[in-house]
Length: 581
Image (cartoon, rainbow, N blue to C red):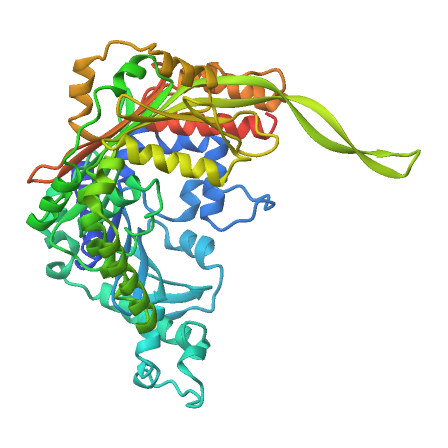
């Protein structure tokens, strides 16, 4: 009976600590990462993990040990509890961004030995505190708060009185430009704010914690190994914008201002047969209307004459409405420049206004409709010649010589729809006339020389309302000769349910990589990967009123007991191969 009572008391205490730690996450955080360590231990025990050299190396780095330190560090030596979740968060304000972590503590002495490594810390109200570089660490025997702050340069520039309000004396002769983001005084203010934020977390009531956020409560899942949540869905438009322009809009998600009423979450699962990430974005009415316009497009069915999903090494498809994208883009970007200094803001504002006036959205939307497919068709090896130099001892001069080598490269096909082939053809013709050395008109298609010793050239043409680009002359000739397949209409219908579709046949790609020039380490790594890398699939549905759903899956080999064990075993093998074991 005593044993049962002790067990119940222990379980209750663990639950209380876990609950209290979650209640220390501020309700107003902008981003939150919840690491479910108990669920990971169900997939692979602590003892099993510690047998893996790569895991011990990771633990050593987490503990702040140097690579050359000979000390043997175990997970338990970090002093962190694995019986409850860990939380990492980012809170954005107009003046500072807080980066924080909440760690449950199992053994405070071990925690101090690992992370603090000093006796010169302060103790106030039952909590200890020390600054390590930019990070302020505050802890007791239950949990630790690690936090640093990054002040907004725009805020410090536009609120020069912030130093006076924080009782910091400065030279009034200094200009704002000198103080802007580069001063010792700003760092003092940031540290002061970080310490106040930590104190507010310590005294935080459950009513003001993330546990009362309805959006967060709805998406919690104890089976998820890692949960990512953010209090805004504005990032969905930034994602579409950056995806449409092949990455040029990246970074906009990070700049997302305050909550717009929506939310975004992604949950990582280590299943028995795969590793899965499920994402959901709830949308406000305004966000839904915008995203619906942007994604109101389908893939050109003619793509599937030249592209077979079942026979491709990899592919990526996307379908956007270019006209809607161009109409919405200036309004989407303008809030991000409000945080800039006044002169910069004025310049960007003028540029955005100019773009909105100068661009004919309807005309450009016909030239580039917004739907496209990128297909990896093959991995080839080709002997190429290149020029280099060697030293002539007789003449004491270097001379140019020609050598040959094998280059391995992927063959690909890119397709994009167009409704205005005439205008697009004129654009290609003008490009060729302006770059006659690099672009050659072959009659039915154009040939592009990338650089002097490139193993391949690019080829482009227009046919069937499609702009084609590839790096195989044989392929571009097949397109022009009409060598096509009958479109798989069921595949067209399935693909058009989504905005994005992606697939990678890792097993087949690795089987095509030649091994004749590989070192022993490279060969061992490739052979192991060939046996243990399978397929990757990712898609994102078109928006509905309730939001946007996306899913990613990585298939794992049958011999692996679950996704977590697989990923650790894979990296452990790569680590041992690299170390020559």
